[in-house]
Image (tube, rainbow, N blue to C red; front, side, top):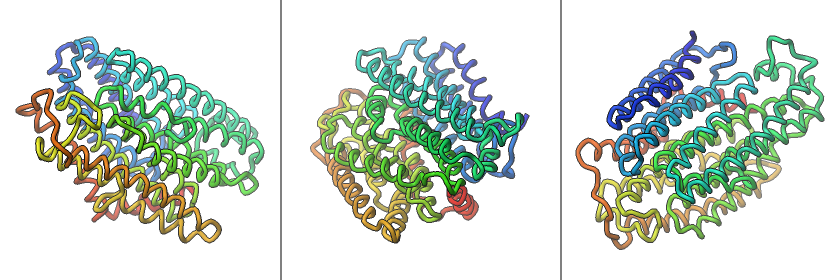
Length: 480
């Protein structure tokens, strides 16, 4: 069995095993072990030549995201091990949580590796259902409401994406063989000869459908609630992983439609949705009082920045968009690790109840301050590099240089809101703790993921390995 298949099925086998383990200690250890093995396989995958194996493929576009997804999956499993006890779950919910987590990780990996667009749709749907169950695991009224909103809105999105996939198949069916099916590589090969009108219709539905999953305006409202009401670790994988899989699906569709010279240019649609997400997300930050909802809205803004980059198109902007997705995965996960620990320590996730972390919890306070600075686009983290490259590419665009001004305006508004919250959470008047900080190994396991993510995000910005840089440059050309 090829490694591309093993890395998908292994977490699902782990989910079955975890569902049968009632003991918390054994379950958290097994969850970390499964995630560590998955990460090791992702590293091995990057060292192998790109290849197609049935319904999966590895190429320059998906391989970096598989590696980052496995890394975030491992660090989130470690963070879960340290903080899950504070969630107050009984043993049934612990078993359900761990099983759903590994189901999600397997589906996320399959969505990234899928060569067949139908398989990609199924994988994203499985990942969505797994995360819906984790968002609802607290069984409170607000958790159920968030889970239902997540399920219904993303259900609408996935229905639109399914219709778009069917229309895309109808556009290409006369030119495909039975063996190729909905293979992305096969669709790319015949895209130039497909009916352009049918391709246009397919792209419109695919963009709306997967754009909903990616948190793009106007079907974004599920995202802040889902981030705020689920267990603390789930916010990290929702923002860092699920959004990337949906955006990758959009990019696969964009590359197919873009290969037909008579079809509509997909770029302006991505530009419009991206810019709307940046502007609405940045303004909405000023009205948020809940820390986890605040950073959920920040994810909408950042996915808008990435969509804007891909809409602008060209090698420079596409590379900036890819760097932004990777940087957002690393830094936003770090933010949610920090905010989650702070919320558990203070007994509240309201911004007004979390203050002075640098004074009361120095390691947590400084780590969260750096993470918020990173998500605001300040150096030395990867998002600074991506935003600088994107603004330069937008300013150099001969046809629409004014778009750079609108994008910069949204970024500045978001930056000001993030710095204001950074000041309140980390350097404001200290607020009293409601719970003792975790001790022993839990203290290290709760703190390490945040600092490790910051180190990787800074390391990639300052000295990205040549192999990864070459892979991302090749991926930028694939998108078109």
